Amino acid sequence: TEIQNRAEDFVVVDIEGEGRDFAEAAQEAGLTTTQLTVEEDQPYVPSLQVGRELFRFLRSAEVGSVSEPFDAGDRFAVVRVIEVLEE
Image (cartoon, rainbow, N blue to C red; front, top):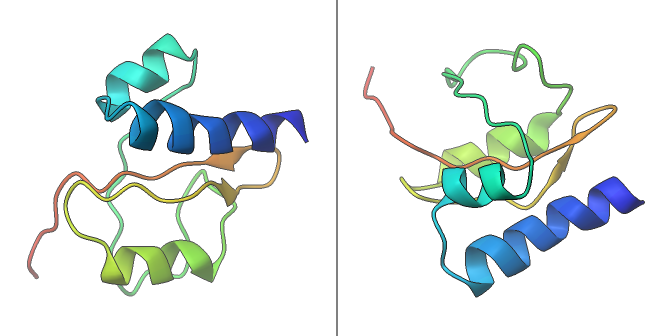
């Protein structure tokens, strides 16, 4: 779909290919950014209809990691890890 292609292009071309700042690239692409805090044992992420693949990504991600696009229901979500907080 067009939305999925746009999300994939954002990750591959704008972020990885050009090494650009995530928030700046998202703003220029007309994409919406939202900051969320996710806890390891929570069953889902409020406002995102994503499955376990997001939590698998977060378990192995480091600060600065950018995910591949996740199918989030009626949209796609690309996640960047800003900070990892210890319990």
